[in-house]
Length: 595
Image (cartoon, rainbow, N blue to C red; front, side, top):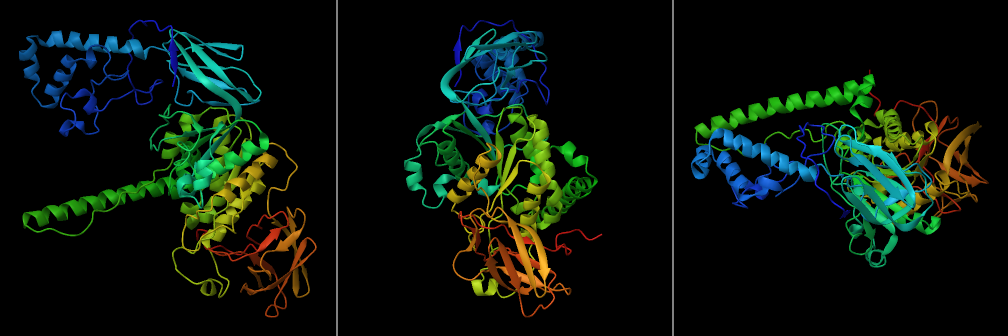
């Protein structure tokens, strides 16, 4: 909530509202305009005469304006002339006055939803504050004795108020023709939390979370959830506000984000702000700027052209369906056939609606739990995922901000198989290829980390409910990568191999205090010779290395570990972190497009 002080009347200004207005329009529903309230006029449509600056302000909020609009909607505009005994030009004057009066409030200094009471500002960063005001209006921002002033241009203004140490609460004051005061402001660490359904998964549905909810009250953790919004162009604002973390606000918040924030706040002892922006089922390309996709010929062909083709096919199928339905109706018949489904995801639409309005808010980094919807194109994800990270980093303009991803959890894709059936023989897997693409991003980009969760998957559910280990491992990665703590933050990752007779010796990074197996003999290793036929192998830990062999493969050339949709594996380091699945070969993958 913004606290207003010293509000003065601004000179009425008539603004032409465009699709990308510098100040987003506030459009009320017809329910607000219609004296009928609920009913056929309460559909989610908007009046071209609707107030730009809010409901019920000036003439346009009066009964007169409501009746005028109602007559227009009912096609009885002549009723207005008779009812009020005015001519056409009188109505034009009324409309002009209404628009003018409505602009009074619209001309005030206004902030985006990111800036509200309870906000967390990023510590030790050049903190931007921005908003909207009349052209030429001088806006001053005051925080902890530091003052910055800007003049609004094209209705927009932005200042950088300096760099601050963690702490608070404080007040943030923004002054122009009116004054806004944000209260209970903290300075600390701000993280974006994004992805698809496993990031969206609420704490209330997480494994054994009731006690965590009951004990969640922590005024040093703040939450903001970005409403779901698809948009064809970047939008400038979000309808959201910051909240303190407690048992009332946390149940519907992202479980992974909460567990991450809780662990990070406990370790760093500073305030933590979590901005949750995710949508279940979303592929990576909807979280990227369209220009980034257009710049890559492969994305242009397979993603952008692919979507255009899908829309064309949908329109043709819909037209055919409607024609068939019309013909059946003429014959007095009905059909059970369902209409074709419209392609659900449009490239760039969630970037426009749920990332663009967050820019350029100062952040420390991002956590990302996504990939399930791209598994069928895992080979493409090798470049798509790093390009998305580059896209975000470029648009945030803060250099190489830390980016931490969650490796896909084990899942048997609803096949309802027993463990014996799953482990009958090694095979190919698009989910394994997607995990490989995720791991590759940590090698090609700086300050990118990966939380491996091969030990907390659910064989029969794409949404494993054990979210606490996920958030905790992300927090470990953040402490090491973003904050430079000298801690073990990752399980073993494949480094190199050496063939030695009928054996292959594997070396690893992130061995920590050493390697160990959980639950007896080593599982999940397969080996192949020149024929590329993989069989299960025997594996033994020798120091910080693993020796792999099989009597069926006297001259081995490659080893794979956990290469399955649902890997059954047990290699860890002694710090309790699982090894990431891997392969030593570069054999053709099942998701690589065939030329």
